[in-house]
Image 1 (spheres, one colour):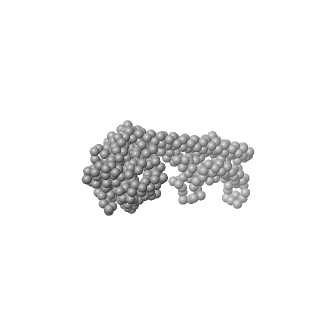
Image 2 (cartoon, helix red, strand yellow):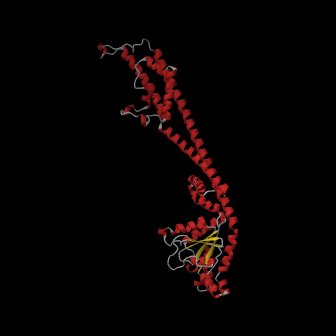
Image 3 (cartoon, helix red, strand yellow):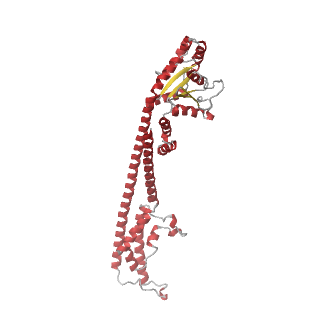
Length: 418
């Protein structure tokens, strides 16, 4: 698979599961199936670079009392990639810890955790990292070998035993792999077999070779584990999102049904009241225009028009109360006018006033009038803030589900190439 295709697939999954970004990066390394990687991790000046040089049998990594390793250094030797990570706590500001941890967690198949014997027991940061690495061993099968370095700087075997006991209390059952790079180098240079054995390096090399032989199986196990975990998490997330979407849609549907019933009921109620009122009226005085001499007089026409307006207002008040209960009050912003008092749904649908029987009858007593109210109030209901917010939630959840499906497809693409 082209690297860009693989990176895009990993990116698509990480967009949905951002907490899995590290696992996805690790999977890409596993898919590459390059040479096994052994990383030396530990605090600054604990003898990591010296240890690597002795294991490789050549001076591949810089050794100095000064801080030399400021970034990941690597060397490929006999089919194995060896990484020398910056020392933990050497220079926090420069990101050494990040580089060291990146090497330990992302790139490594085997970790050599180096701790100088002269420092005694593990400090809190070392203990935390070693505990996490051991938990990773249980989860993924990747091994961490603990190396107690610079044991030649201890006074005697009793001092070594004391330190070993202290570390065992911190990490019960841990194998120490006590070594001395200096003894090993002197043993090689002087051809001293006993000194070589006392250096602890041959035993460490044997342990390393055994673990390196297990790397292919460990990688296969880790690959299957990571794909399985990510696949399960995607499925669970997809199911949870589908449940949320179903609930949102059910809420949307139920709200609409409640609104339709409430609106139909209030329209039927006020229409019945209007119809009864109109049927009780006698002669239609409202259509008789007032004359100039009636300007200040109380006429039958004025009284009837006022009666009609009151009936209309009462009907509007009942409808408005029902609408308010469903969040339908103001017009959408794009329909606002300069006159704030007119920016209401009631005025947009019903107008301001009704003075004549025929208008009132057309609005409330004819099927087309009632249907118009039902249709237009429903239109504004769907434009209300609550309904738009719910619709946006549904759209977001639909997009999230689509992203989940895309991530699942991307993971399958990665898996078929693994």
